[in-house]
Amino acid sequence: MTASAAFFDLDKTIIAKSSTLAFSKPFQAGGLISRRAVLRSAYAQFLYLVGGADHDQMEKLRQFMSQLCKGWDVATVNEIVAETLHHVVDPIVYDEAVALIEEHRAAGRDIVIVSASGTEVVEPIGELLGADTVVATRMEVEDGCYTGEIETYVYAEQKAVEILELAERRGYDLDACYAYSDSITDVPMLEAVGHPFVVNPDKELRRTAIEREWPVLVFMRPVALRGRVRVRPTLAALAVGGAVAVGGVVWAGRRRVD
Image (cartoon, rainbow, N blue to C red; front, side, top):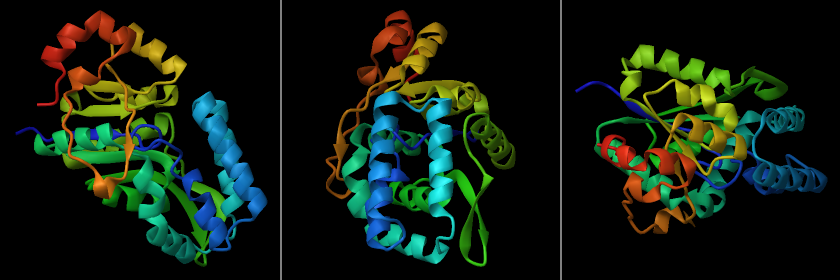
C-alpha cells in the first residue's frame, strides 16, 4: 500500500477557536499574563473568529503572542497546558473533525496536524486526538525561557514546505494525500496534496474553492472529546456551497475517504 497522510490545520478546522488564545485564562491563573493581556487575547480571539485568518490578522496575532510570551518559563507553560488541556480543548473540538480523523486512520493514513500555533500547545492537542505527527511553530528558547523570537513560523508557504519535507522523509505519495483547512493563507498547503478540502472557509478561500472545484465541508458540532458519541459522517453528507454545486456528484464518487 502506498504511504499517505491526511494533513489537518488545527484552529477553526479541528477546534472551533485559536488554540493559543484559548489558553489565555489558564496562563493568567498560572501567573504568566495579566488580566489586561487576557482581555486583549479575548479581543484578538473575537477578531480572529469574525474577521478570518488573513495575512494581516495572522501577522498581528504573531506579533502579539511573540511579545506576550517573552521571558516565560518553558517548563511552566508545558505544565499549565498539561493540567488544563482537557478543560480548555474538550468543549471546542469539532465532532465532525474527530470522525474524519477516525476515517483516515481506519484507511491506513497517517494523521498530521500542521499549525501556526506553538508546538507547546499543538503537540498535547495532537496527542489527545491521536495524531501521528505534529508540525507547529517553534519559539526560540534560551536558558529555559522564551526569547520572544520565533525559530520556525509554520504559516502560509512554510506549511507546504514542511509537508513536502515530511513527505520526502516518510515516503508519502502526495497525490494520494489529503489536506484540510479553513483559511486562504493555507492555499499552499492545500495545493501540495492530491485531495484538498476546505473546512468552514473564510470568504477568500470559499471563492478559491469554487474556482478550483475543491470540496467544501461544514463542521458545526463542538463536543466534549471524552464524552463524544461516535459519529461517522460521510464526506458527501458534509459537502455544501458552490464547489459542491459544481462538482458534488463527481466528488461523491471520487473524493470519498477510502
